[in-house]
Amino acid sequence: MPYRWEQTETPSDRAELHLWPHQSLSAEGFSIFILSFFLLALIPFFGLIGTVLLWGLLPFMLLAVGGIWFAIRRNNRDRQILEILTIDHETLRLVRHNPRGPDQDWEGNPYWVKVAMHERGGPVPYYVTLQGSGREVEIGAFLSEDERKTLFAELSDRVRVLASP
Image (cartoon, rainbow, N blue to C red; front, top):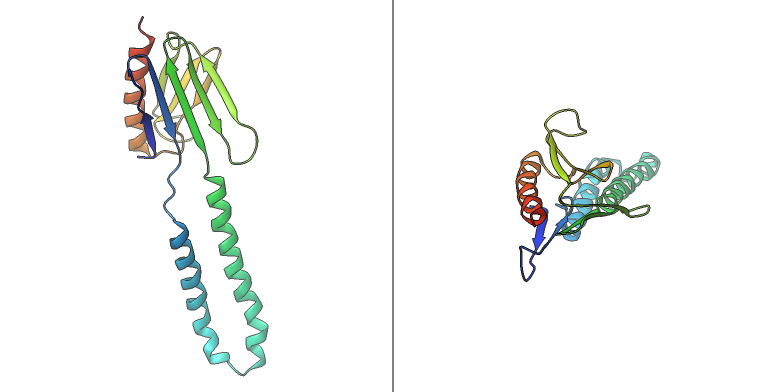
């Protein structure tokens, strides 16, 4: 799962959760994909060797390879999101580190914070939010549906345990 509860010395005093989106394409996989696409795109050009048409079509093929390279790199940069939720007896704090733009921060009292799951009506099914301090913030919207259900159960338990005196 693309989230992890950080180990603390005494789990009943403090908990820290790190969440991030799936990153399924490694650097090696990216290189293999771009090279494969380039080589497969060259196959139709073998029949054009020695003609003027080759030089007319080659820039468009290279532009297509460059466009795919740019799109995959941009997607990779946009997926560099990290959400850190810290829970102790006095404070529940969520910090979202965005790939572009400033970090987003939210804080509430764990005793009054409500962990909610919206089965419908959110941007994704089984949308998990934290409600408190006059605001409602999302958590883990980039996770899969099953991961959000599991996160909701784990998060509800942790908040309930740490909010109790």
